[in-house]
Image (cartoon, rainbow, N blue to C red; front, side):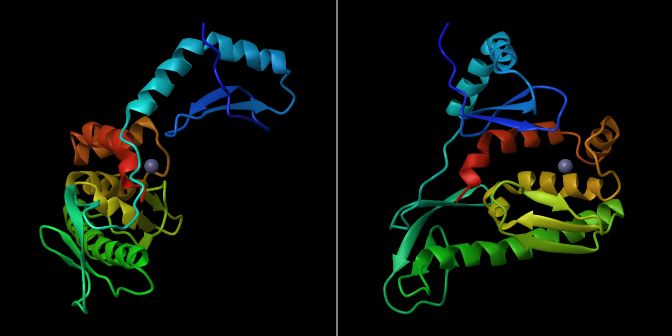
Length: 223
Ligand SMILES: [Zn+2]
């Protein structure tokens, strides 16, 4: 039996021990405050097979792209890939053709310019999809905001406002739509109960496939 490396043990006021394997394949144990170390070791041994399986699964998933913001690097927009093309001389801002054309003079730098562009595009696309789903479902969010979140693609405030990360706009439209529908249903059902998923399914019968795509490809969206 191979040794399992535990990255972190987090103790808190909880009642049970739980194991988490992060998308980066790190193994984290959550345990009640006074759990003896031996009990934690036992728990890990007992779940050895599950941990290995999970770690292997996470390692197989697509990795985040580390961008250097150089010519030819791939950027995703609504599920399609666009190689970066850096234009010399003053351009008319960032343009998406079959490439992502970015003037070299973009301020303060190309990286921030691209992120600003993504954010503006995300605001436009996500707001228009939200309007469409409002018409389809009769649910209406109090506001739609675009955030800089790296993990939470969407969230719902207790005042009925919806937040979406601009990073989501890199994913195919059907994935963007899934996150929107998910948050729309939260307007009326704040938890992830069976009732919640039944409502999601009623609006989007193949939601599970889209959810799976997002789980498996989330690292692609982390730029
Ligand atoms: Zn949710």
